[in-house]
Length: 197
Image (cartoon, rainbow, N blue to C red; front, side):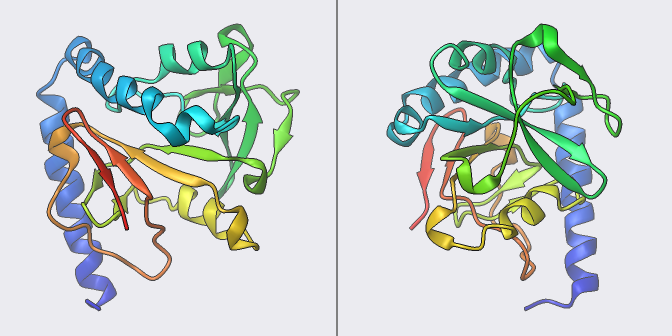
């Protein structure tokens, strides 16, 4: 395994490169390019089977999820992450009108009153990321929120299915991995579905 210092530098370089590519694409185009990704996701057998889904409310530089979250909430139990210090809480989505600005990133998130659940009760997680690779590797924004959340599953049989979603240019040859990094089960891009293992 590479020295930690090298991994940090490589990840920093990848984040900078992907960020520059994202900035070249207007928001309207990102929303348009998100449609085939979300379409594949909603037709994916594991997604169809799942009842309790942890989605995410997208920021402007991510695969757009707002419409999908609302649509899926009509027939599934949809949850969203809430930043709580160094951790993510999992809270039920009860409609756009109930979302409040999050403290850390001002991302809309369920209010304090929303029902909370544990990661063990989630069937499937739709995971955003800065970059992914074909081996299930994922690189986030560097805060480790999702890795910490997944590490809390004590019974591995209760680990939810992890589906990474990204634009084609976010799929790279190799994401540098550290021991705590969680692998995705599936990655969905604009042009393909990559099933790991």
